[in-house]
Structures are given as C-alpha cells and as structure tokens.
Amino acid sequence: MSEIKIVVAGPRGRMGREALQLVKNTEHFTLVGAIDHKYGGKKVSEIEGLPNLDAPIYTDIEACFSELQPDVLIDLTTPEVGRVHTEIALQYGVRPVVGTTGFSKEDLETLSKLAEEKGIGAIIAPNFAIGAILMMKFSQMAAKYFQDIEIIELHHDKKLDAPSGTAAKTAELISTVRESKKQGHPEEKEIMQGARGATYDGIHIHSVRLPGLIAHQEVLFGGNGQMLSIRHDSFNRESFMSGVKLAVETIMKIDLLVYGLENIIE
Ligand SMILES: NC(=O)C1=CN([C@@H]2O[C@H](COP(=O)(O)OP(=O)(O)OC[C@H]3O[C@@H](n4cnc5c(N)ncnc54)[C@H](OP(=O)(O)O)[C@@H]3O)[C@@H](O)[C@H]2O)C=CC1
Ligand SMILES: O=C(O)C1=N[C@H](C(=O)O)C[C@H](O)C1
Picture 1 (cartoon, helix red, strand yellow):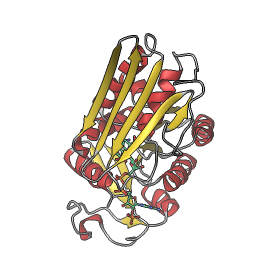
Picture 2 (cartoon, rainbow, N blue to C red):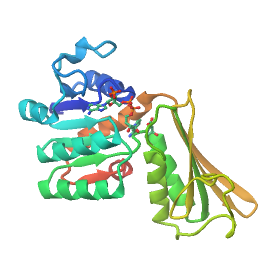
Picture 3 (cartoon, helix red, strand yellow):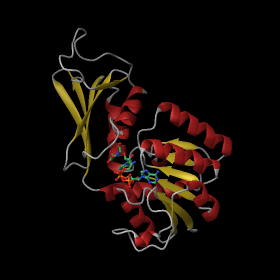
Picture 4 (tube, rainbow, N blue to C red):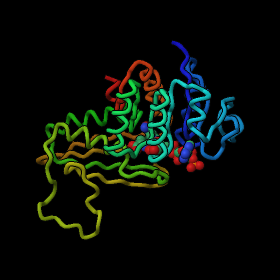
C-alpha cells in the first residue's frame, strides 16, 4: 500500500493518544504533524506520555495544511473544534476522518455539500468499534418487529456531549425502518424534568455518565410479554482503532462525505 500522510488533531486526548499509536504501528501510515491548541512549536515526542514521533505540532490548522500537505486529517477533539477543522480540511483538499461527535444535522448537511463541491472524501463516524456498528445494525433490524424502543447509553464522566453520537446515530438508523410514534402512556407526565430522557422520532434516549465507564450502549425493545436487549461495551479505546484504520484507508478511494462506518464496512 502507498504511504498515507496523516495529521492528528487532539493528540493529547484519550482518543488522540490511541490514534498516534495506531499511526506509529501501521507501516504505510506516517504522522507528518499534529494540531493542538496548547503546544504549537513543539514536537509530538516532546510532550509527556505521547509516542516517540518527530512530527511538529501546530496551533494554526491552515499553516499546518499549507506547509505539510497531508493526505488525511484524523480529528478527535470537541464538537465545535471538530466541525471547524473538518470544514478547513475540505477547503484545503485534506481528507477528514472524524471521530469527534456532537455534530448537528445541519453541520452534517453543510459539510456533505462542501465535500461534494470539492470532490473530496470525508468520513464522519460516531463510533469506530465494529461491535458498536453491529449493535446499531441489529437494532435497525429488530425495529421492524419491535416499535417500542428505549436507548440507554453509558459513558465516562469526562464526556462533553449528550446524548452520545452513537445513540443519536442508532435512533436515526432505527427511524429509517420504524414509523414515528409516541411511546409510553399517552397522558404520561414527567414529575421530575428529564425523567423520560431525550426523544428522537419518539424513541427515548437516556444518558448515564459515571467514572469507571468507557463507552457502552443498550437498546431495549419491548413487545407483548417479551423484551429484546442489544448491548455493546467498549472496555478500552483500542477497540475503536481498527475502524479508524479502515476509515483512513477507505477515504483515499472515495470522493464524498460518508456518515457512519456501517456505510464503508458493507
Ligand atoms: N468515533 C468514535 O469511535 C469515538 C469518538 N469519540 C469522540 O472523540 C472526541 C474526543 O474524545 P476524547 O479523546 O475522549 O476527548 P478528550 O477530551 O480526551 O480529547 C480531546 C482533545 O482535544 C483537544 N482540543 C481541544 N480543543 C482543541 C483545538 N482547538 N485544537 C486541537 N486540540 C484541541 C483537547 O485538549 P485540552 O484537553 O487541552 O482542551 C483534548 O486533548 C469526542 O468528541 C468523543 O465523543 C470518542 C471515542 C470514540
Ligand atoms: O466520548 C466517548 O468516549 C465516545 N464517544 C462516541 C459517541 O459519542 O458515541 C463513541 C463512543 O461511544 C465513545
């Protein structure tokens, strides 16, 4: 395989560190730079706890792209930052692989149009773990038979966005095969605000945040005298890396924005 030149945004983060290891351990991947709002001017190897990689760190993403001309940006930052990074990457002809969650429907539409306009591939994947993709696909299958559905997503307490990108994507996939409906008693009242969680197309989503957790989701389907539960657990962040690798390799061959890893696995 030919060499793929990569820039990682968010290299000191929980996912960013794991992505640096992936790049380091993959023969045809080369880390040419990193984007970090606090450590511009340093090298990755100079930051405590990061792998011994010589790549320079930039705070200015445009300078980074003009000077290094990377093939791919891997973005693992925050919703606001990730959205701007993705837009700039597309403007500079750098293919974005985005794990950052919390993008709105409008953000996705705007970025998709921009990718199409520029003829550049982009992958935005709320979850890179193969088991999570299967959990979402199995949930979509089950929703044809069970229309009353509640999603419980559980994450570590450092997570910024709620609901998780995975929960939002699961609800979105389910709503393509299930007619919108209001669940629960028609006259139910929340005695405490938020008790029934968020709703997407009538599907209830509950977000749990606790120390000790990594990334977990259970989708509950209620039927007459039965319940089906589909669950996925990520016990470490390495679980996401085979998906990141696949996305980086695939993005070199596509020229449009893909939202969700399920679209490139099949
Ligand atoms: N798609 C997937 O499979 C997965 C996606 N995620 C998503 O990935 C994102 C990152 O998660 P996680 O690693 O846990 O979060 P972290 O908070 O650990 O990492 C985010 C990093 O981004 C840095 N950052 C903030 N602003 C900028 C900026 N302007 N430029 C460069 N870096 C910046 C932060 O630095 P500082 O701390 O100094 O602010 C931090 O180091 C989240 O959106 C999360 O939901 C997470 C796991 C899996
Ligand atoms: O912040 C996290 O940790 C995770 N974020 C993603 C999400 O919002 O779905 C993916 C995974 O659940 C871990």
